[in-house]
Amino acid sequence: GGGGGGGGGGGGGGFAPAPFVPPPHVYPDAALPLASREESHRPLCGAVPQPADMVLVEKTKVAARMSGGLKGQADEWILAVVQRYNASTQKYVVLDVDAGDEGGLMGAPAASKQHTVPAKYVIALPTSEPTAYSHYNEFKAGSSVLALYPDTTCFYKAYVATPPSQSNPNPSHRRDYMIEFEDENEVTGRSEPMRVPQKYTLRLPM
Image (cartoon, rainbow, N blue to C red):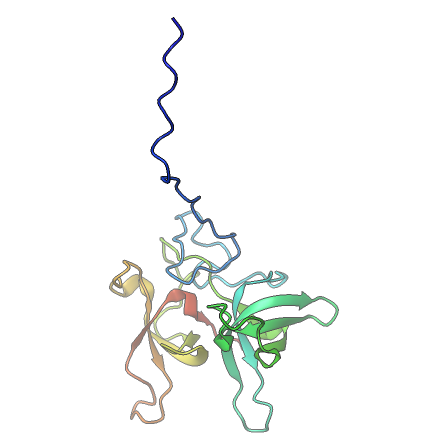
């Protein structure tokens, strides 16, 4: 006798949405993925720099240098997203993340938030964190770095007080840098150490 008809399709309305898998080049806003021990020395893992000839694709999160323009005005490094690369001029068009582009509520980004920046002034942010630390994938104590000031979208020259391998894990069980920013109001010329994630701590360009 033919086997009983397969039980009725499980109760209606219980369909599960497909899990969201972001494209690999989209930069995660939350914690970075942890690289395996073998991959902890690959480009863009922690402090490992991008290869010199690497062209950054659209949506790569970067620090981009805006020239001060006026003489004597400091250059400013901002958090930005690559829109495109022009190989003939070797410049990137980047969008200032402050442009409200994150929420997408603003519709098309304002032209004033788009900047054309020479490739040498565009630095990709790390895309993973090491699980095994070395002098190659983390900046040691005392190093000069370019770090994102907490709760802003600007990077400033700063100094490593404590590297991730020596710091206590944060609430997400990740290891951050403790960073001292330059501060004219302090006797030492530096701020109190502040926690800055590895994804926002970059090699200071020479």
